[in-house]
Length: 311
Image (cartoon, rainbow, N blue to C red; front, side, top):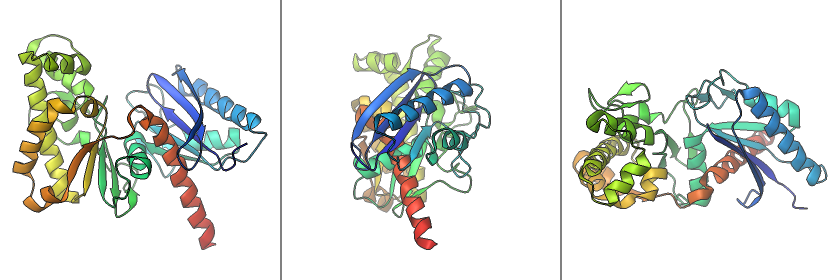
């Protein structure tokens, strides 16, 4: 039996993963299931799996539960507030519910923050004091590590960069035409292709066609790359990070985006902030979501330890 285990819960719109692991990032066991209708069934299933972990481990005391979920949510109250990919999850006190059903203290972060923690602790961000993790997946969000701490803002809303409007008119994302998410997310790229070419293609299909030199797909990629550079230039000049890590679509097809991204980034950002920072892909790959949830648990453990030291 391995002592000092932690639990991770990665809540997505189609799948939920529940896992147990170590503070060093070793995944000991993982169970996935299809996301069920409504939050009640899902939290009941999650709690049952965690209790089964406790039974298997002969009732040992788990240090914490870390929950990673798309926002909006409030990390300080542990409440999920109506994420677009989770219909019916309206003001759900997920931490309180899991604490009451499992007896383990629970902590919540949005998925971008959770991924930033994982990359900082176990991935491309090891050893850096100031970094930004950019999701570039189904949506677009940023996790901010500033001065060796996760920065989440007053109510956990920091890093919602997909909401920034880059153009007065453009593809829809985050409820805004011309938003950064409209240009740099799976849904946004698909919307953009449909708006211009009146055909439904997923971002994966657009990238596949672009790699085959299809001009329509290359046009969408060029637009996305340029807006990625413009958005990142804003982050460079405002935050002056050492490192930007980009996941998902960019990680899989970096070759399509890199040239235009670097060109625009060099043109739009201050020379010193550009020189200070490098842009890299995620190191954790397919393990990122799992380690993100464990990273939230470890953040909670450290917070609890500090609180006890102050008593």
